[in-house]
Amino acid sequence: MKHTTTVVCALVLFGAEAKAKGPVAVEQPPACEQATTVSVLARLSMAGDSAFASFDTEMLKQTARDAEAALVCLNEPVTQPVAASYHRLMALAAFVNGEDDLSRRELHASYRLEDTYVFPTQIAPEGHPLLVFYEEAKLLQGGSPEDLYPPIGGYVTIDGEKMDMRPSETPVIVQAFSSTDELLETHYVLAGQSVPRWGELTARLKVEDLSALPSTTVQRKKKPAMPWLVAGGAALALGGVSYGIAMDQHSRFLDTSSPDGDGSEDTLNGYMNRANTFGASAIGLGVVGVGLMGTGVVLQVRFGGPRGNPDLTVGPEVSEGGADGP
Image 1 (tube, rainbow, N blue to C red):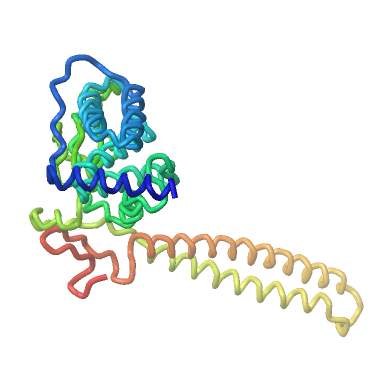
Image 2: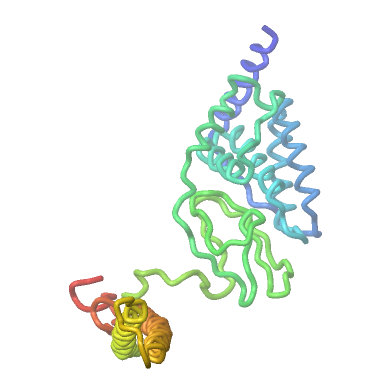
């Protein structure tokens, strides 16, 4: 019975707070006065958990504001576990402010970083609406990818991971680094907000971007596959002839019906020598023929294709080999 009373008190307290003040936007952090570390963020996240568990909403909201101020003053890269705890702190603050969608988005941001996290019972006992939000947050979509514009020669991390895009509908911690790994700036970007731009776009060229290019025909270098195929076929044909002669001489050598007499031994030796010579020739021509044919096939497949070395056209319509498509 005591456990049930605790949950009801939590619901009444947080519900009354939200109804009294309505949805409140998360305040912008104050100006940066001194550098902070990720350990400061970690301690603030723990303080927020304690404030939520003890129903101290004012302390929780102040802790969230302090965390935002500390975040932009970081002097070191944020880690993914600290980023996840920061998003949970923001989710708790949004929850008590009645900002349900923001709370779910922050919970989704934390879940994508730590999908095995479970809220302790002192923070969210069984039946607490925060747990319902958490389950709903797991099913949210992160949003469409948004291109990032890192500093020239540098890079950008999203929640502690180096990336070239960010999910547009997910709150993220953005950090910009120079080419020497120096931390330049840290930002807390909410869902739907744009990430600051530092330099030029370095993401991959998209297929739709080709529509802006002028139509250009690139002449492919044609590879002479046919001579290789012809030479290989000729070598195999000569090898077949040599093999036939070798087998004929071998049969004559084994023929016991041949009469014995003067000169018969020389005749047999001749059969044997010719069988060996043409047999070796057949093997050599066969190896050469297979090699030439293999080279021709590779050249045809790699550079020729079924349409005989087509040109490549780049422009509003990208095609290869004509209007009938690949």
